[in-house]
Image 1 (cartoon, rainbow, N blue to C red):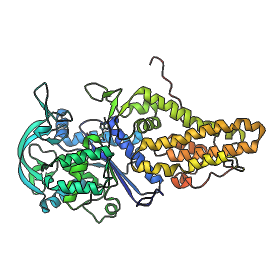
Image 2 (tube, rainbow, N blue to C red; image 1 turned 135 degrees about the vertical axis):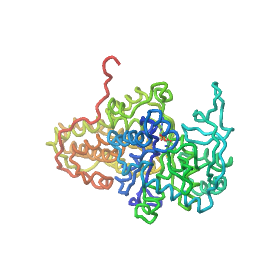
Image 3 (cartoon, rainbow, N blue to C red; image 1 turned 90 degrees about the vertical axis):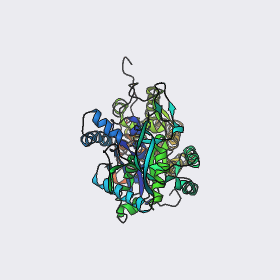
Image 4 (tube, rainbow, N blue to C red; image 1 turned 90 degrees about the horizontal axis):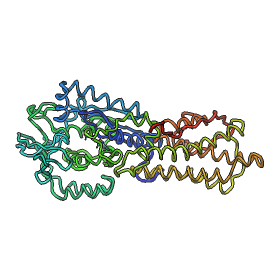
Length: 520
Ligand code: ME8
């Protein structure tokens, strides 16, 4: 037990952003979903009931324009691109329980209901919007936020070009929520992570909030406002509502809704924190719905030191690294290389270092040499331990204490720290093998050799169980090699010891070295 207010059986609801279907997925989208997949797998192994949601954001002017640019009807266009996001789950072993599309009926119904609630609560009024709009970000901007480019056009801080928009619009009374949002952040210090982002959001809110335009009239691809179908709901109000739709809203009595709302975590990139940490809780508070427990904004990936962009031609599609380096390897790299929350660089050199050092030399070699010695010297079965020495006990204590060490890291999305803690034990185990030298004991003391190899097999077993959320292939292959039963691979299985005499399979390396191919 990690302590804190929940028990391990408490439901856990984690969401990714829903991705725009204006273009195909790339490695940046995969990163967010990967982080959520690790959380979902970790919590399931920890005995919790999990709902892990991802999906696609299909309405709005940006998607409509992309469809038209390809000469397609927006629905046919979104049907096609949405599949490319859905298919990622196969290639990346994402274990999402649901995949939501904002063009689905269940979602349209949820959005209309939320709108009515806000309108009934007097939170929405009709007026006229005259100001700047960035279609790329689907965001309204004040004049003071803009810069003028060399081409004379105006640009938002994100680099997106803005257009002048003047149209009738419904507004949400965001300005009325400034104080209550600040109170909410104060009362819920874990609501925004990491800490530095929380401070940014709080100073943005302290700086004053303007009412938010929440409908558009100059295009049609979206959800019509109830009772005023000339207006299309602002795509961010539509999109954010997906988190409610997926747990059955507006049926707030449904078992799923009661189990999973408020969500434990909305994982997002730092580009869309404001929508999730300011607008979303304001909408929810105004509608009388409890906000999520936490929003975490992770950092940005660059490629070999450069921003990923179509014009530079350096956008990494999600399949290339998996084909080049392997799925486990890519998953491990992305979560280990960069302190989660910071920006990171996708570099070939750094990837190869991680693969050859952490995976092949450290973890892979530990497992391979331990299991091979057992296979060759102990009749292909786990030896029974004799009395433990102090060194044996220290080794076992470290691995026994690992789950308790990494739970709090995972709770605060510190994936890299969790992996560091796991690799501390890997390193300790490699030192233990070197010091105990079981290969030498084979000639001098086979009983002692059996004890050392038993300790190593138990360490490998526990490490394989604990690394399963991060890597979906190698750890399972190791558990297969030691014939760990399928129904004893969750974290509860860490509490019972490996039983001696269990036959093992002929060990095979699960984390091969990456060898540069000729000519590279
Ligand atoms: O913003 N590095 O969708 P989107 C890291 N539809 N993460 C990256 C990244 C990069 N280089 N590029 C993209 C939207 N991402 C809205 C969301 S939610 C109610 C609506 C990830 O397709 C990151 O998670 O533009 C970022 O927040 C998200 O993709 C943006 O996806």
